[in-house]
Image (tube, rainbow, N blue to C red):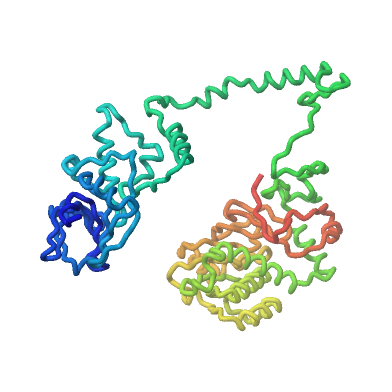
Length: 501
């Protein structure tokens, strides 16, 4: 065959990694100049902007004949019944011919009516001709299925490989049966699940089953196998309920001989009555006689108060190694009494937790021994001690802990240092935590947001704010000795909130 006889054939020309792969129909073959021209070419699967491209033989790495023109198909089959020819670098190479009797390949003039082809560089434009030939044969009212496998997975750059044999015919028939239905046959309305479920009367069905079982139809021997009435059925429990039977809960488990005039309750509903200051003083005295010394009580109250203060300051969100540039500042206002010693103990524990402490304690010639001991320990920390209100910070602090008041020495409120400290706390606008404040009949100069009581609460007024109770380690038999029926309301905590009843 002459070179001109291959005009109209579809070929794929590989020009290497630099130029890429071109596909198109052969429009001209020049044996003298060793060139070949392709019309309507595609470069790497993308349609070229120019209508024709010419290649030199030196640029061609591999040439594949993808589709032979119908004019020379018969002649090629007669001369080469089994093979066709590839031209690689100017040399001929035999390869099998891919033919299909079921495909009607249109001529070059028929394929020119379509301008868009999307094939990969490795695939031939035969699929383009087949698809457009199929589109020409479809009726006008044809509607392609977009939800079938044939349209969603066969993209323009994908061609389904051909298979031969009777098995392929069976698979094709099965695919046509599955995906070949018209889209118009699919109902437009959705299934009404709620309406269908409403048709099922659950109560009537269970009643029918119960009636059948009571009549003896539910067992082979005619015996009854009743599901039981609602009153006879065992109770059901939630996932957070205790399935074990327990005794009834007693919410009033603390009884005092001399009520203080006010009652509180915990988050779990346990009633905690208040006591008078005289009974509170007697309770601490008996506890001290049994070994709960003042030093132990101060240490316990200081730990509980510091733990509550750390929570009020932000807890782990504020106090962590990554937030050292925002260390909280606490102003500690203490008097020269046991209440002041409790505040100094709290300040020592806060200073050990990287809290900036400023301790205000007026200068006195003689102080109680517990106050002196706590002050000596506090001086070993990084905390700062001042004796003049003018040395307190002018800017607002994070928290003010008030330990100025005393239950017995009310004359201290007339002292200039006391009034100056109260005025500073009210002007600083920082939240105030009072430790063991006096009872309601004694007026407090500093309005607290929180108040912490020790052991059992006193009857506090509205100026005390929210009341909390801490466990200072008084044994149960000590309560019993002073006439108090006591059962611990703390549970797993050492500081619990109390709510007025």
